[in-house]
Length: 146
Length: 147
Image (tube, rainbow over all chains, first blue to last red; front, side, top):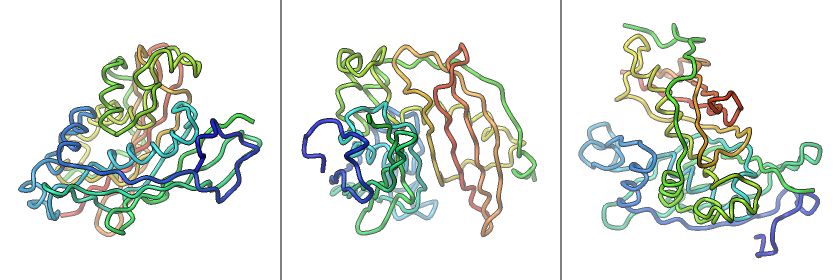
């Protein structure tokens, strides 16, 4: 954890540093809000009936909502959303969102590489739901002050 | 049946202009649980050196997907959208998008691979300002599930 000590400097960061972790609770209302904000109105994220008709267990979260929510750990650490120069992931698992109980995403992030020449660090983000990994090779490249 | 693999290398020039607004950034930040003040507070954004409130790292997905629709919705693409799931996504930010930006996207079908009966279609959107300043390269891999 950064421990609230301000913006991390490149020289102070080492591979393996844990930069933060959080639990993100998602409800069906969150999925509707994300659909409206992102324009992704695919009904598999809002209707159990439609989701089941295509072989899903029920409504699942948008992969992009998981990706977008998980990066908060990185932004909170580096203190500047614009310092994230690259962010990519594979969508490897579903996040079923129960109508009553919602879903919990467990997110954590660790420094995976430091590139002193480029002035960047690679942060490896982990996101799981019910013990299953839902993002694969989720990586953010962050520019840090020297 | 049209085959997605026949579309490799197809390009679309910069299309409709998309204006980034403070309201859209604030709504997207709220919807992704993002709390950084630079998403909603112009002064906080300016303190970090930006001209206006900053878009979250995945904000441009909606614009990229609307550009992708030029390909996906074309019957010649061979893509049945009801069978599409999002496989991978990557954003390379040349600079953060900020409120007031007027953006356009040029679309390229980068690759199509067939794997385990599915078509893996990778598209790239080169997002620039209307004046041609690079802002973001968004790469999406769509999995078109086989019948």
